[in-house]
Length: 101
Image 1 (cartoon, one colour):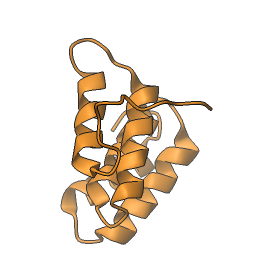
Image 2 (cartoon, one colour; image 1 turned 45 degrees about the vertical axis):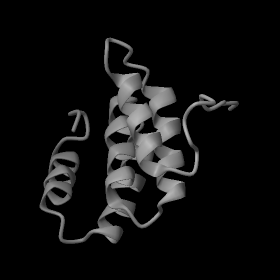
Image 3 (cartoon, helix red, strand yellow; image 1 turned 180 degrees about the vertical axis):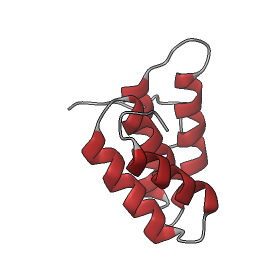
Image 4 (spheres, one colour; image 1 turned 30 degrees about the horizontal axis):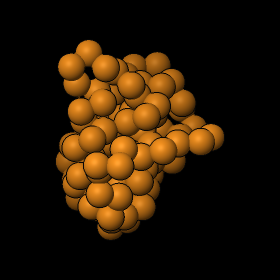
């Protein structure tokens, strides 16, 4: 798939990429696919930060992509195994994969 980042968003700054994803999901935009692209880029820029991977999992759940959601949840858990919010999300995901996290 072809995707072009907004020229005003610094692609080396994971937080800036995550903020752009949040902007795409606010103000009624609800552009899950493009927001996912920004969050995936944030996770690549900072691969040791579980929150970006976790946010990718949440968006994958919104997009009804069970395989990708499970992959991101597992990756996030590897990065931050003691994160209670993440563990709770995994319990919800495992109990009913049709629910949105």
